[in-house]
Image (tube, rainbow, N blue to C red; front, side, top):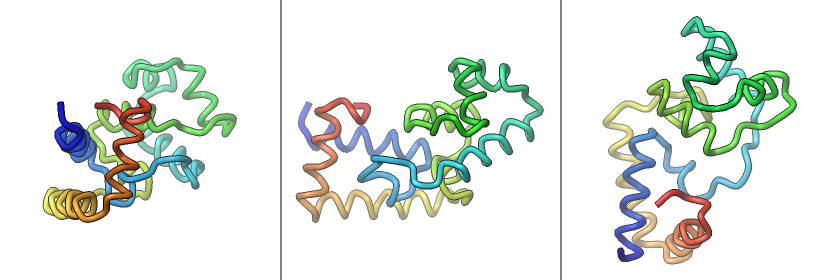
Amino acid sequence: MSPYSICEKYLLQVRDLGCDAKDIVVYEEISDSKAIVDRLIELRTARGLSQPKFAETVGCAFSLVSALERGDKKPSKNFLMKVAKAFNVTYSWLFNGVDSSEEQKEKEMSEIIDYLSDNALARERVLELIRNGKLEK
């Protein structure tokens, strides 16, 4: 599989999760984990789920959900991806509380592809992350 097809496949996965352009290129650390955890609690309570049931739905340990809500841990990228998939919410909503419309997602995806096409350094960074196993292929 060529590097371009790997990037394309990854970008399509990101689009399915509803990521914003600013979320795609680099995900090193979550800067405002409290706000994200608040949205996770909002999501859990809006669905009427206990912490154990939320954990079961996401496919993680109850202790992780408990630790996140207490502020003892920060949510990982993989955990947020699982939440987005399990509850059909966008990654951008988890990050910033704004849910992108389908049209906006198409525009952002186009911007990402254009950016990676025009920016060799960003393209190489995405490929490096993929090669190092930090991004799913």
